[in-house]
Amino acid sequence: MPITKLDPKTALVAIDLQRGIVARPTHPDSAGVVANAARLAAAFRAAGLPVVLVHVTVAADRSDAVKTRTDEPSSGAKPTPEFAEFVDELALAPSDIQVTKRQWGAFYGTDLDLQLRRRGVTGIVLCGISTSIGVESTARNAWEHGYNIAFAADAMADTRPEAHQNSIERIFPRIGEVGTTADILAKLEERESIT
Image (cartoon, one colour):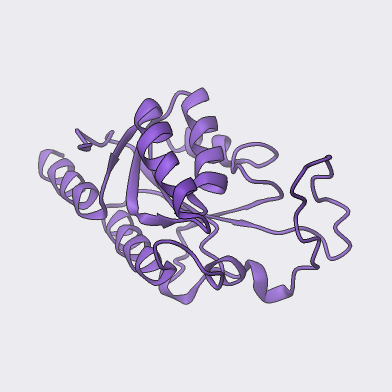
C-alpha cells in the first residue's frame, strides 16, 4: 500500500479533529492520530500547501441536523460550544481553511470543493476521525470530484476497530493510495526537492 506521489498542488484535509470527537474512545487511540495529523499539518504549512481543518456541528436546537429514519439514530445530544473547537495540537494557523459541516462528508453543503479548486488543488491527503464515517464519506465525495487521494492510515481512528479496518483495507485502496504519515512526509520532501 505505497503512496506513489503527491500532486504539485495537494492539500491536507483533516476531518473532525475537534474536542468533542477526539475525546471519545477510538481504535487506535486518538492521541497518536492527533500527533500524526499535527505533524502533517506542520509539514504542509511549511511547504506552502493548503491545510483544511473540517469540523462538524449543528445548531443548539438541532434544526440544521440531518433528520432521516435510521436503525441506529444519533444521540441527539445538544453540542456544547467546546464540542466543535479544534484540538490545540493542530496549532491553528491564519492560513488554514476552516470548513464547518453538518453531516458526515465534508463536501456536501460546504464550500470545500470551491476552496480547493480556487487554489488549483488536484490532490488531497486525508486524515481524521472517524475512519468509516467522516473520513470515508469525504473520501468517496473527493473521488467523485476527481481528486487524487492519499490516505494517512496512522492518522485515522474509529470507534469500531472492524469499521476502521474495513475502510483502510477494502474501500480506500479502490479510490486512492493508502500509506502512513511517514510515507506522506517523504513524498512531500521529494516533491519539495523537485520544485
